[in-house]
Image (cartoon, rainbow over all chains, first blue to last red; front, side):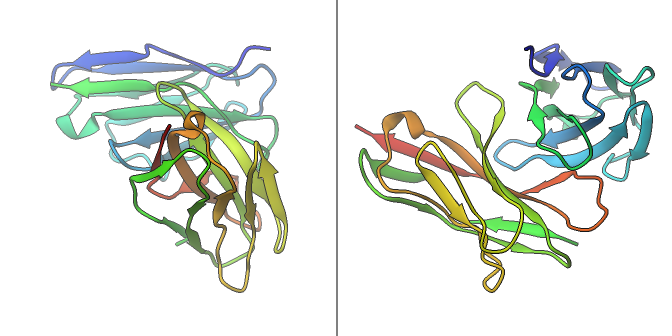
Length: 113
Length: 114
């Protein structure tokens, strides 16, 4: 079946612009995670959803970052007033149940100029 | 908090050489341990996992054993191929009632030359 998809794959934003990154998890997967991967680093946890409930947002770096999953499937990560330090690859992962294997999407590479 | 440390790369090997990528972890409970691989231009893929002490995960000729006494999960392969060139990430999920978010090491880039 289809894997996790993310769009856009690449996004260039001018500093100060708002961006929205979309994640389509595998159908039926309860858990959804967002990670941020800086160049040459491992992914770092941003936020976690169980169905539509955002249970952990402790990894969001600032209040400019906002995520939602209103119907328990598609999720959007929004970054307001982008800064250069927001440049990174944003990864989405889903799993069938809590603590099960996570399947990753290809990521969205965000470049803030 | 919990953390993962893996050997820095890049690692360059000739085809058919033996591979070891070291990984150690710090955790308060009993984590589950993973190796993920990222091939050029592709997303992260689970390579293997182990959920309790002394478990051995294996896949595609790669192996790693969960060593609680040394808090390690070293990745090994007996004979690497050019197609194994990728970035390898060691990761853990905290034990207990955690929600399951992964904690990753920084990654080790492997280049295999023909």
